[in-house]
Every structure is written in C-alpha cells, then in structure tokens.
Amino acid sequence: MKKALINLFIFVFVTTIHAQENILSDKAEISVLTIGPGSSLNDSFGHSAFRIKDVVKGTDLIFNYGVYDFDAPYFILKFAQGKLNYLIGGNYYEDFYQDYISQNRTIQEQVLNLSQSEKQELYDYLINNYKPENRRYLYDFFYDNCATKIKDVTNIALNNTIQFNKPKGFKQQTFRELIHSNLNRNSWGCFGIDLALGSVIDKKATPEEHMFLPKYIYTFFENAAIKNTDSHLIKKSNVLYKKIETPKKNHFLTSPLFVFTIIGLLILFITYKDFKQHKQSVWLDVTLFSLTGIIGVIILLLWFATNHHGTHQNYNLLWACVLNIFVIGQLFRKKISMWFIKYLKFLIILLCLLTLHWIIGVQIFAIGLIPFLIALFIRYVFLIRFYNAQS
Image (tube, rainbow, N blue to C red; front, top):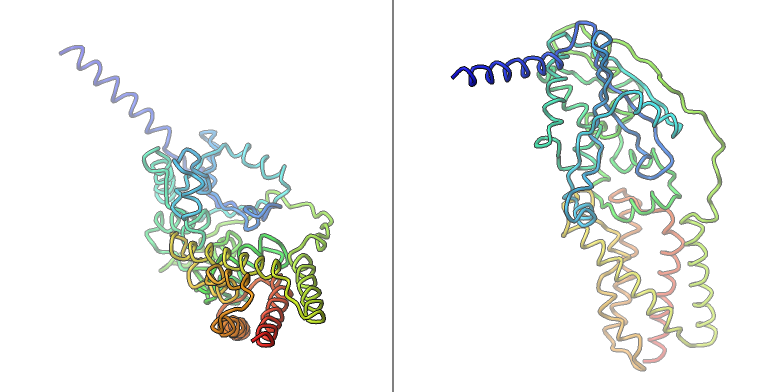
C-alpha cells in the first residue's frame, strides 16, 4: 500500500511538472510566419507556420502543417492518388529561420492579438495535435494545406469569431489564376499543372478560399478583425528577413512554348512534304495518335481514379483523345475504313470545341500547347484530304 502511494505521488508530481512546462507566461506571443516563394516548384507558393515565443520560459518553437509522411506505406502511389497524409511538424525557431535564410526566402511575422487564455488554448491545441496519434491529416492542395490549417487553428482558438475582411484593392480570381500568379506561365511546372488540373479550378474562388495560398493568409490576417469587438486580429507585423533579389535566368530555349514550337514546326514541315509528294508519313501519325491517346488515359485516371478534386472535368481530353489508341491499326492499312475519315473530322470538331472552351473561359489551357495544337489540326485536315483522295 505504501509503495502504491509513493508511485501515485511520483506520477502526479511528474504529470504536474510536465503540464507546467506547457503553461505560457503572460509575456508569451503567438505569431503567424509567412514564408515567400522558393526556387523549386513545390516551394513556389510559399509556406505558413505558427511561432510560439515565450521569453520568460525560454521557449521559441515553430509548428507547421507541411511535413511529408515519408513513413506511409506506398508513399508514391498514395501521393499520386491524392490519399497521402501530411503531418504537423515542430522545429526550434532558430533552425527554421536559418533554413529559410539559406534558401533566400522572405520571412514575415504577424503577432496575433490574443488574450492569455486564447494563447494557451491555441498552444494546447498545437501540442495535442503534435502527438503521434493526431499528427496526420489528409492533404488537399486547395482546401486543406499548410496555409488553410493556420486559418482553421486560429479560428478554433478564437471560437470562430474572426471576421475576414477583403483587403484594399482585392480582386477575386479563379483558382487557376491564383496558381498562375505564383508561376511563370511558360514554365514546365505551370505546363504540368494546366495539363493535369481540370475546369473545376477555373471557377472563381471565394475571398476566404484565396487563403489556400500563404500570401493571402498574410493579407487577410492583416485586415481581419475579431467579431463584436473593436480589436484587430494582428497586433503587430515584422519582416524578419527580406529576400535578396538576384538576376533571373532566361530559360526560354528550354521552355514548353519553345519546345512545342519546334515540334509543331517539325509536324508542319513533314505534313508539307507529304502533301507535295502525295504520301503519308505513317510513323508520324502513329506517334501522334499514340502520344495523345496515352496522355488521355493519364488524364482520365487522374479524373476518375484519384481523390484529387482539382483533376476533375479536364477538357484537355478534347485534344488528348483516349480513342486514338484504339484506331491506330487504321494507320497501317493500305485502304482505310470510311468511318476513320469521319473519326478524323470528329477530332477536328473536338479541337474547335477546345478553342471555344478556352475563349469563353470554361477552361484555360497551357500556352505551350498552342503551336502543337495548330500543327495537330493541320495534320488532321491533311489526313482527311489524303484519305479522301485515295477513296
């Protein structure tokens, strides 16, 4: 009995000490850090994090929701399927700061205007969220990422009393326009995004939905107020590190627009030669039909076989027609079936529909595709004339 009481006393003592370690002093500050874009594609949209600073206790910690769960089984497959869990991560502030300085990325700080109880509630939430059993969350680029988590967790601490006001000069944009604002339109990263993501991201984002990007967390937090009070959400703002501007390299000669212009010109040159010589370069048509068909299959898989919301309703299928794979056999025949000519006319109609979708804004496509699509259109027209002449 005596031994049990001693063990109980030790347990209560250790638990009390541990709990006291997580009690913030009245000098503590909680702030939101906004990290500017980096050089790689996955860093192009910036980053967000919480900073917990308590000078009395010597605490200076970072919590952020942008950590990959590399221990997850079938990591690559789950990432492709949109079923990958991300983690909340923790760092010492100095390590975090030095890491982003080494990457030459701007670091901005916004100190939250919280009461002592609100600070403690937010800190307790983060501590609890950091436990192994709570760390994971299903990542979604637009609706549940490192930036939206900042908004959601802050709202929890303030019992959903944050009033987000539109910043001065705010212009409502589509999700795709918001992505483009952080990327070079003529880059391979932007090309891949425009190819993989469908028309669902060409709808206007609500003002609050803009906050899937860290820079809008900063601007909306800067203008936010606490409902039923005269208080602003942000007490003060600081620039902890300002990016040193460096000359930008010109990558036009390796850009999608240049590469596809060369490919388009090559297709047009071969088509012109075929027209003059009254022949068909079958190898070219087999390549084009195979390539467009395979890309179409990948787009369909992204649409129907993954949990990525942004890949739905992708009208790139209007040029990357899956059916092209199944008609390749016609290209090897000495005398093609009459339905194949009608099929080629169908492909031309699809390209016209794509142009219409682009003009009226149903979906915005990669600008690098323009020369390739023009060449594809002309090649289809040539094939129709060539096969009609043979009939």
